[in-house]
Image (cartoon, rainbow, N blue to C red; front, side, top):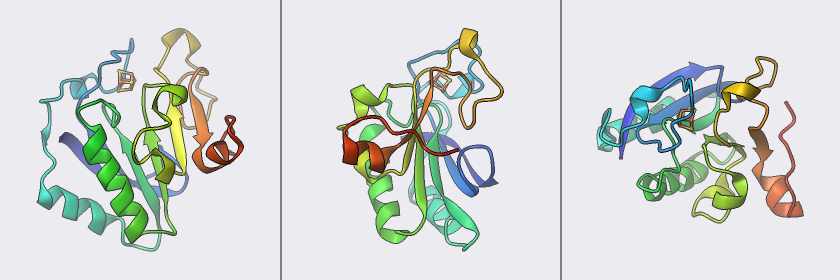
Length: 163
Ligand code: SF4
């Protein structure tokens, strides 16, 4: 897997201050995507051991609320295995912090993938320019959902995260 960046103290991609891993690879190609430079799987640099150490080290401070997987699409088929491994490792190392993930896929199509059940929040769906709304929290267009993963799995129907 390749990635573009690890941002720290990020306030725009989930609750609190977060560490965000921006992975490479996205097939959705939404109109006016903010990160088209991440679409190619081969863009960015390899997510190697050094990058993984940097990621998990950045999550250590008490003021960090958790990790957010973004991109690109962390659930691009070529990223799924590696991202699932990272979600599980995060869950083990930081049981009291939260894991968020942004994907262009719909919940219904990816809910059974490995690692999804260890997330706290999943923001789903492509960015749709015609539905763009500055007022919706954490996502760019009103079709996208900020899903409370644990409650959704528990109840069997979509429960949105309280924003
Ligand atoms: S899913 Fe996200 S990264 Fe992919 S094209 Fe759409 S907005 Fe861009």
